[in-house]
Length: 144
Image (cartoon, rainbow, N blue to C red):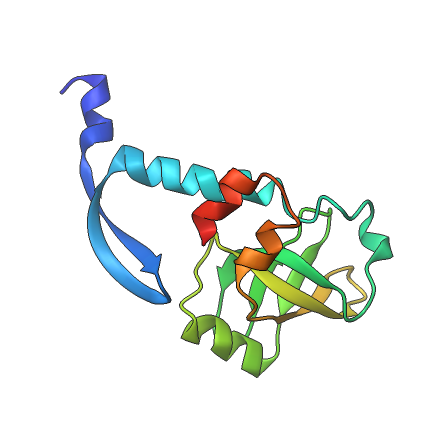
């Protein structure tokens, strides 16, 4: 097998589309590009916030989902601090809306832990509104 043939290998992948999860067969290089696009998007979230210390309760921001567990969702905020979603309703809504690791979602700041983590609540607004605020427009359109 040539070195480049490995990228043409087909793999089974979970794809979220219109709130539904599908299993599909895809080429490895398509999976790499898709995951890379998600990571690039993370670099553009919350760029309008200079310092995490300026966050206030009830502020709406974006979060990158890092891990979804039964009673908690861990998020990265691109601000040097992590966020956690702990309330049952938010976790249920995240699961009902078929959100997955690597997705960028709108959240509301509801508090702060002594450890420095930001306590968040999932906000179900569509990302089309957020894309008008956070560049680049071309990249955010891929989340719509």
